[in-house]
Image 1: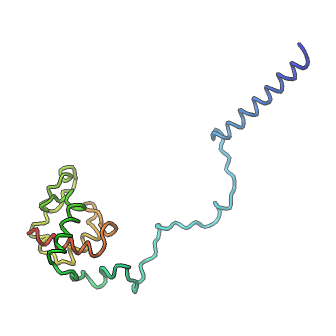
Image 2 (image 1 turned 90 degrees about the vertical axis):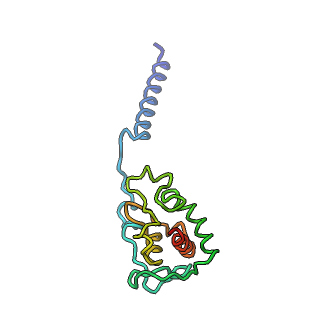
Image 3 (image 1 turned 30 degrees about the vertical axis):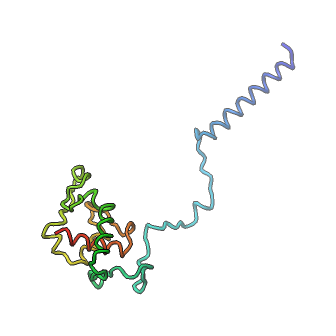
Length: 167
């Protein structure tokens, strides 16, 4: 066999072995834990232990409620404009579960493990406006999601005014 051909075969085998070894590291067949400074410095996890809201802080939309003071009173008059706005918001955000008439018979209600409340019933209608506002804002664990991120403070009060008309 020609010596140049032997050298070419050996060089090809060495190159093939090098490519296989590099590919094994590239596709994590062998894992190497490289020490980086990011691993040894303290990490900030933003929602693990959030800071409490300052007691004198007010949201941009104005004060919604303060848990220390109790449920708020309704600052929005229950006029035709507020009720119409509340009806539209109710149909977009609430009617899926509670139904158009608020009886808890929405299209999704039959598929839920915990059935939605009948908003025309005595227990719900006996709540104060602030109590209904608080439920809309914070939700009911395991039953209803909080809508404080979906609706502004004014929109939630409009929904409260509409829920009052469902009696």
